[in-house]
Amino acid sequence: MKTKKLINDGARAVDEMLVGVLAAHGKHLYAVDGSPRSIIAKDGPRPGKVGLVIGGGSGHEPTFLGFVGKGLADACAVGNVFASPPPDPIIECAKAASGGAGVLFMYGNYAGDVMNFDMAAEMLSMDDIEARTVLTTDDVASAPRDQRQKRRGVAGNFFIFKAAGAACDLMLSFDECERIARKANDATYTMGVALAPCSLPQTLRPNFDIGADEMEIGMGIHGEPGVQRDKLLPADQVVDDMLDRILAEMSPSRGDKVALLVNSLGSTPLMELYIMNRRVSQRLADIGVDIHATWVGNYCTSLEMAGASITMHHLDGELQTMLDHPCDCAMFRAG
Image (cartoon, rainbow, N blue to C red):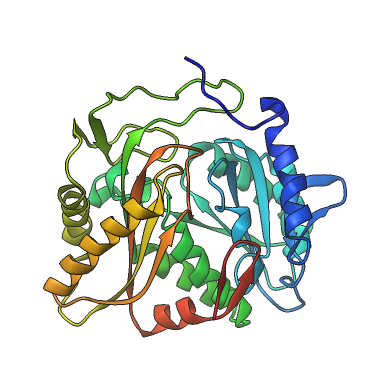
């Protein structure tokens, strides 16, 4: 059974989306001439500043291009739906973002992205632009704790990019920007739950099968298998399962601070997200963990997938400073 989408042609969906994005957010963004998949912050790059280039497949909006702007990412390379951008738009992003102090590449840990960003970094070195990479690996479900380097990057990108963008905007050194980005990644934990599949614009077919009364804990944002499929449970029990897995790794102490993201995977409405947030808040209060800031809504989606994710960012003084630093992006503002 085919799904319904408000598109013209699946093969043109990403490029037509980008035309609409620039029409709506021209104050913040522009595309490189001749490279429409290279989206640049109008008020981002400047001399002496470490450039921050993010990127990945389309279909996760506002990740990635929504986080391009002053105080966060300087540029975003845009791929096809659920596919890495090729090296060329990444290179154009890096050139536009380069202020002579190096360029930091940040993206989720997926094989295609790693290959193409690494190729871009090699080619940039021929133009004397140094690019370093910090992969995001916040998805607790995607690999065991002792193999964290194999984990995927999902909604935790929101906090990890935010910390790195603040460090870059504060004109910190290349080494310091890289260190803070890695520290932010190490302090970020995400668990998701899927209730129903999404469908790609090109196929209009569900990208996985799940029963009408089932849920899957830990499913990835492209439909990668999770860690447990079960009958759909009440929201509090689902949240408890997700939180237990996060807290077992994060091991917060009474009095610690976290930032919290309760994220829709696309079609789960705010009502349900706030019901989830209520339970998270209760659980953290019970163990004496302070919530410094909360975001609830669509931040890292999977087209129209039904489901949600919970991300916790374990704060210390430095990461809180980065989180609170102002930014002004196309689809996100803080400070």
